[in-house]
Amino acid sequence: MENGKSSKKITKIVDDTMSSQTADTGGTWTPTEESKSKATTFRVIAVVGWIVAIGCQIFAYFKLQEIPVNMVWMIGLIVVALIFAILGNILWKKANRLDPASEKNKFKFFVQNQLGMIISVLAFLPMVVLIFTNKNLSGKQKGILGSIAIAALAAAGLTGTDFNPPSAEQYSEQTKQVELLNDGVNQVYWTPSGKSYHLYQDCSYINGKRTNEIFQGTVAKARELKKITDLCDRCQNKAKKAKALDLSTE
Image (cartoon, rainbow, N blue to C red):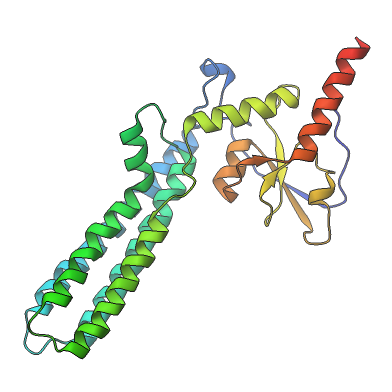
């Protein structure tokens, strides 16, 4: 299938296989070794971040036992815990896009994709309860610390929740769809602000005035880097028509 040329700058995102192979694994998508290695690194850092966040909350628990309670220390510990929790959540979700779980085991799939949310609740919810039940705090102090802790719980929980979790099955299906329409080639195009990936670099949707650069790579790279999961309808229809035309002229 011959694609038209775009006037925009094309930046190729290198993938050591140009496909995280479907053909060599019986049609099932698997991550590259590079992606697995990066995912492992991100997960280790994420776990360290979560441990620091929980450690801050444990330290804050002991600071709550002091009379009077040092408000500066408490606020600082909650903020530091939040920073490390969010860092862990972001890296964990990035790791899941590099090396997604399988949907075959529903429990494992849920835990792996929502682990950031689970850790966030375990880290911040006990602190919220301890603040409001602490006898060493005045009503005003409980209001201030409680509000900050609740806001931290909400922020950490939201960043830890994956509302569109990736799966190996999704990657397989999306890669097969592109390869079927693109003469067996796992190659798509997308923009920094786009929400769909495209089969054609000259597609009008990615050649507007809003962007000067188009990225080229695999389906997995589009999802890994930009969380893009949808194929452009215009490109899909164009490819289907081209396929039908090819068949009719054979």
